[in-house]
Every structure is written in structure tokens, then in C-alpha cells.
Length: 204
Image: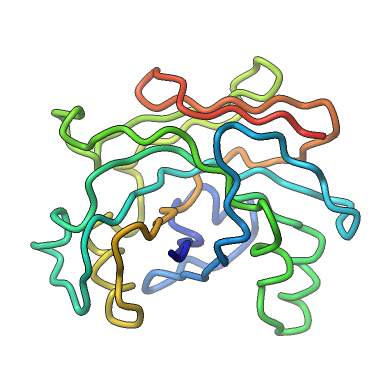
């Protein structure tokens, strides 16, 4: 199982990070040790002083695929949920400045919290039209609409599958909308997909 994460897929999030709009999907991977499931708490690691949340729509891959054409991409995932891509922002900024890979800021243990999956058939409006939000300590801090993605879900699956064979049980994080921010010990994060609570995480 692998966790594939898309970066810079919402224009307003790109602006808040003062980054350039990519011409094609940007992606990176997290190892299976990054997975955080069953609403377990997240413990802030001691190597970062600026830990951020990033709420994202997550797809569950349901069959093996390579060089997938966009028109066939929908058949390669069967369920969706929300996830938190925890990011050591201070380390990421250092990596960018030095031209280094991002792994130490993005792929550390428990940095990919994943909620309860919902079969995609439940959403008659289509996955590309899903709405989601995240509340921090009861206050909404992120709202996302999948229709605002720079690169559609079909395009993401097609692009990533050129480089990596997708396998059953893989997860695809599709990027975060604006509103990312810091977390501190004692915070509680809750994520809602079309109004349904699918994930919560206490920060320790």
C-alpha cells in the first residue's frame, strides 16, 4: 500500500503559500508508516515548531492500473473520505530553500490521517462536485469544493499512473483548499464530507 499526495491543486491555497501555479500535477508519496486511522490522536513530533493541517479529499484505489486514460479513471477508485496531510511547515520551507526533497516535512510517522470511507455511488452529484469542510475546536477553518481543483480527479489518476502502478488499497490525497494553519496541543480537528462527519483527530 502506498499513499500518493497531490500538492498545489487549489489556486487559492497556492496563493497563500506564495507558490507558482503548476503546469501539471505535483505529487509526492508517504510510506505506510504515515497512516493514522480510526480517529487516533496525533502527537506533534519534536522536530517541528510549525505543524500545519491540510484537509483533503482522499480516494481509495480499487484495482491495479498503469497508464490509465482519463476516461477510464473513475473505475479505478470505489470510495472517498477526507484526510489530514500533516505538514512540518518549517521543515518544508527549509527544504524548498535548499532545493531538497520534501519527505522529512511530509512523510513522517502518522502524517496521513484518514477518515471513514464512503462508497462513491452514494454521491449522485459525482465525486468531482463534493463539498467538504474542517473545523478546528468547533470553528470552520477550511472549506473545499472538489470542482475547484486545478487538475480533475480523472486527470490526477491518469497522470500519476504514468509513473506508478496503482494497486488495490492505495490512497490518493487530492490536494488541499485554502485555510491551512497551525495546530497546537489540545486542538481537536473534525472533517465533514457533504455534511457527514468522517474524521476527527485530537492533537497531543
